[in-house]
Amino acid sequence: MKNKTVLFGLYDDEEVLLSAVKDAREKHLDIMDVFTPFPVHGLDPILGLEESRLHQAGFVYGAIGTLTAFLFMTWVFTRDWPIIFGGKPYWSVPAFIPITFEVTVLFASIGMVVTYYAINGQGPGVTNPVLDDRITDDKFCIAFDVADADDDEVNSLKQFLKDSGASEISSKTI
Image (cartoon, rainbow, N blue to C red; front, side):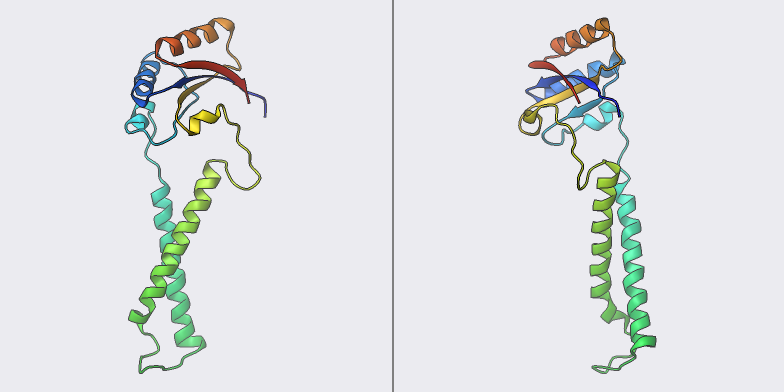
């Protein structure tokens, strides 16, 4: 993977950031990413991002967990180890409900975590570059990939960041 040179501007307020992102989209600037220390309401539609489909994956994982628990208990209590205890029949569906629910939640949660990490390129042994430590604390950031840009484009992006209210403008090779 080749190194990227990233030009980024740090903002002190999320309202200024939202305004800057709107301006960048109107000027058809190619935003690499926007970093915020907390979710900013209304940022996704401005960036043109679609709704996450992680909840659909969670449903599929939960359904697999439900089937796994229910079918396993059905097999155990009707074929493998058919014992009548407490006067219940072999196939007592109401007795299966608590365990089925717990396995459903377990499969959905573990599946969604693994899916989230896989999609975002995170996980054990992965180190992601950090543009500025303050982005995770109290600063907001718009980043542009300027690896293939000429000096005029870089100066134009710097001027845009300055005009849009960025408190600091920096570049970093990651």
